[in-house]
Amino acid sequence: MMSLQIWIDGLFTGSVFAIIALSMTIVYQPTRIMNFAQGEGFILGAALGYQMMGVWKWPLIQSLVVLVIAAALMGFIMERMVMLPVQLSGSKFAWIIATLAAAMIFQSLFNIKYVNVTFSYFDIIEKDISIFGAKLSVQKLLVILMMILVFIANDQFLKRTLWGRSIRAIAHNPDTSTILGIPTKPVIKLAFIAGTIVIALVGFLASPVIIVAPAAGLFFTIQGFTAAIIGGVGSPKGAVVGGLMIGILDSVVRSWLGGTWGLFSTFFVLAAILILKPNGFFGKRVEGR
Image (cartoon, rainbow, N blue to C red; front, side):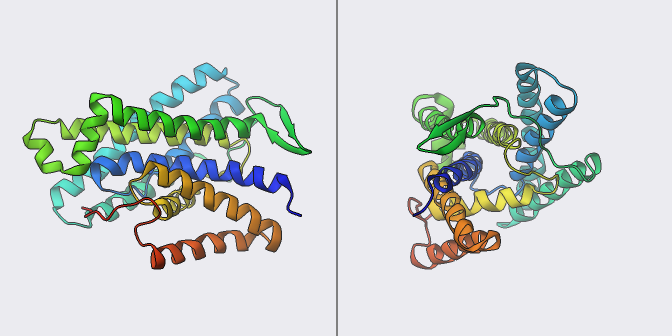
């Protein structure tokens, strides 16, 4: 019989991947760009958490304030690094090169600063909850709750706010939105900043539990991208479903067959989805830039 602990660990891992996929979806909606540098925001959150709370021993609130400011700055810089080449080149595929270049630049900066370091520090709340003999740390529970909160907040933001409706309009037709006077460029900047803050926060919360290295940004990007593809690119619901699916699948397969098979199973499912349902579970056919 499969242990409940395996499912709890899978739920935690899936929540991490789901939040990454949600952050990529936030950027994708107004831009039609899958940001391959998104995972570097996760590393920023992990690095600042390690530096501020593990090394400098700063209090939690102060660390969170600095983290949000740093993530917003990173999102602003990332938007310029990605959107400027896209706008100047006019190429349909310029975003691929631009996002990969941004990822390599940020990764190099992290590698220069942190040599032979893994970003791990004490749990923010060092307490475990017992569930029928299985253990769920409060730290993991915070990540799971964050996933639910981000999903709900994003859904309400898109439905109930002027900026959210602007994002939906731009996602539907960017040219018409510009003609109608919707501020396209500020909305795109907001999307990059919000997406980076979200992924930095999960990096901050998850790094005490999982091993995070300075060069691991691309790994987290790939996991988030995989979750988004499986669930349906541009769909927040799909991002959550895809993230939870690959997280739980990875945990179950690892417990049965070993570590390397978990990653293989994820990409096997991705390949199957691309063949059987190319738009994912909740995705729609769209024309990307």
